[in-house]
Length: 593
Image 1 (cartoon, rainbow, N blue to C red):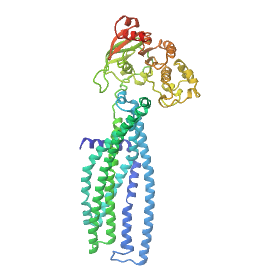
Image 2: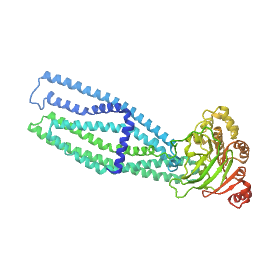
Image 3: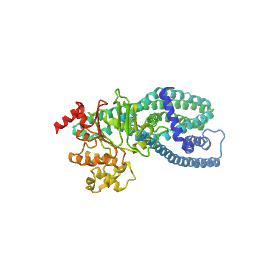
């Protein structure tokens, strides 16, 4: 068994064992009902035989009286109606319960995927487009919803239909049955020739579909940039190329599946024609009744029908196997940043931070982003991180929150390794205001309260006042209940930064991280905000990432990073006295001012 086939087998086994098993009784009943409903053509064929041989007496030697014929006709009439009514009832039962099970499976999968995405480390998101992740949660799960239980039930019913047909044909005429069965190996041969190529195309289709999702997400998010650079036509052509490749794959898929279906239909047609020809000869010689031949002929058609249906279902099955593999790959993704077995809860944090020979290499990178970072921060001190763009400042504070783990070395808070602290406990005591503020759709109050849902309205207002955003909020018609739209698109960059600052301050963190979080503010607002921030930072350990020396100089000490290393450290006066990067930045900014 090849690797792809083994993977497909494991996916189906997992789908049945983990997601269908809780509903096994309902699925079993549905499978039985569906199989019974599928037998209707055989019943109708048998009733046709009775009509020809016993009512019309076109092939029977033993003749029935007219009253017997009329009674039999009435029975056949009511049998037809009864079978139709049962078929309608079975179909309703089948459809409702199939939808019930499908929705439960989809609900469970989406819950598990969402939970897994919340637990996964940042490296997972760094390496994937947002649209591709969304495609797995929404689009791929929709495919499972529409096809998982349907495919399984349909396969069971079609196989049951095939087995019953085999028994009926053998009982009616062994020789004719042997002729009909002789065509079956041809189905298997044609299927094996084409199925591997169809599976490969379906995998490519899902990959291209996710790429289109990712491309759309990028272009919608970056719409302002695209328009600013007048690159609409470039993006249209780029999307056209992606869509064209997708359409070509779809047409290839259609071509191969239609070819497989056409071959199956041709085999069925030839086999049925041979059966009809030889059966007519037997009727002519009197070894078989006309009703039996017609029953056999209709049963052969029903026998070939599940073969054609199962062949046509291949496209659904291959697509289902592909999306199952993609969904399960997310669920099976290893969570590398998690609580250790003996992780402790920190009820209180003083704020002493220690980096001990920390190295960081991002997954897939060739070079270390941080190299031998080693320093101590006493409780209540303010540290400024200064350096050129890409020097590793943001990477350093991301390690403190355990958004990433060091490749080598250790980070301590109050003498306790961050790897030995429960994540929720660690992050509860650290407040971070990122350079690019991330807000959520909802009201202003809901966003400020995101890290502390039980905060009172007055506490929300106080946090907004400290962040210098309260006056702006009060100028809005709905004030704190104003809807800010997805990602806070209705706000300016400075307003978003101040809201993000209010979010962090409301949690009253022991350790505060400001990642260039006032860069979007005007000079007057920034100066007024820093007056308040200095009071707040006096009682907590603070890390301030900044490009402005005027901001950095107020820290207790300054770390200067370059190419992932700490190249200078000390107070503003000490660093000015040297002839390093910090002094050069100071001179450049003083000259520019």
